[in-house]
Length: 456
Image (cartoon, rainbow, N blue to C red):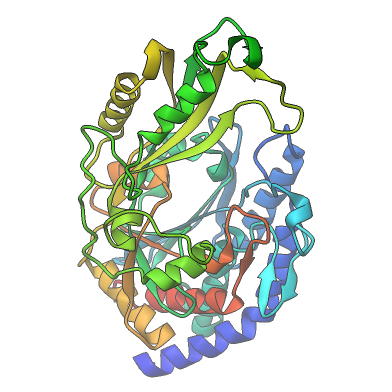
């Protein structure tokens, strides 16, 4: 079979499988697989894990099982042995999802895949159950096209059950079971294209440092009429401190952390970013670099939450204490421990009025940069071009996937590639998450073409 005829056959097979993919995604989305028993029954995650296990066993990955990890989540591992002399490819995704957040903000049922304006809506439709279906559809298409020949490479499917909670179950599992998961190329299906129809490798991931900043000034709240003025206001001190994290242009300003890096890959057009991020008309974008510089190459401090009295029900009182959760994203080249020390020193040095300040580390994850130029990358680039009809591009991602660093440390010779169905319109982690079914189709075709050609 020539390359052109193979591409045509796989394209037709993937297209024919899309109705089944929609039915399967409907069933998978129906599982409320949030790995937090305080919010949803643990049985929902177990049922989702079993569904994934059965689906990939049916397609031919018969060395399959559920593995309990250190955080109590179940990792699905299913394998097909490599033919003699052929490489092995690991396909990663996760079946757990973010909680729905404000269910009243959803325009469609949260746990029911719903088609609207050509997109499929539901929690996990993109992140990451849509990627699970892309992997599955690729293997189904390849099996249908090759018939009894079997897969041309070894395949290991790893589907995580606690990625969204960040509790590290699979991160601990990987080095403890290195031989079980060993592969020559790792395809991380937890990213997406720069835009629908634009094939994209996610080249870098920013790391993260979270701290809880607590400010104390008084033994307790005091009447603002009687004591306001000379009494040190903890909430005002907190606001002052938070304001020091950015300059007047919106650049993050933390002593000891460089903030002049530039992104050397494809750029992120400002107007497209404004649309993707929902920036209101007339509101400025932040920073003195390009959008790509600010989003992918430089550190960024974000205030995630503040403990302070609510507006409704507030009383006339000077606050004696206040807290904030600060999220610092750092690009490759900056160590999280270095970033934590710099952020802590910055906050302590900028504290006004000799207020009592406590900076407590909350979470940390290292940044990541994938390699380029290897045989797997070249094969995936060719597969992208054949599937989408255009050359691939690269982007960074502000989010963190700590597992990528674990994979890189455990398998230093392996090539790691980050792709997927999660383009910006998907609104992952937000109400009204959706996926464009054409992205599932094209990513599935890309993976099928890659698996058919890699190592040949």
